[in-house]
Figure 1 (cartoon, rainbow, N blue to C red):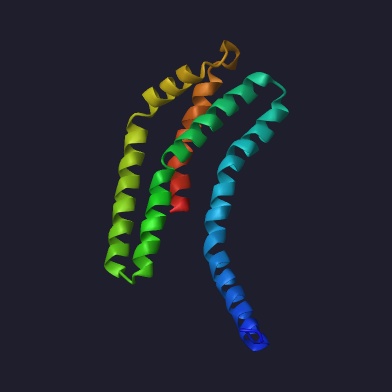
Figure 2 (cartoon, rainbow, N blue to C red):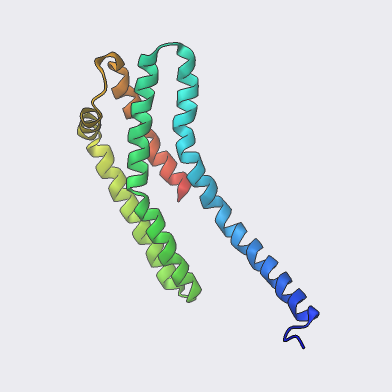
Length: 159
């Protein structure tokens, strides 16, 4: 005879659906957040693409690349704090959760201030490393500076 009855399999199936729905409710916001990051550069590219010159498009590509690099370079803060917070929540350690929140916010603010203070040399370094053609011109700096100004607002939304 079978070890499992139809009723036990049915209840296990229902419990699995409930668990999957709980996981989905927790997982969809970070998934949407990860999808929206490249969309920022895509929207800029679509809008500037209508101007008709490759110069503007090149400047937007440089700015979007710098933004994406900086965003993902500091993704460790979001990913690391998420895992540690999940562990603390699983252990019902509210004090540790608050401690992790405070540490993450302080580190994010500190990194943001450092980026803001050193944005000019960082932009110059990034543009130098990317070696764009001279045709891209001064638009590359303005687009890169725009990317830096968007970072603090974008991080505030993802926290």
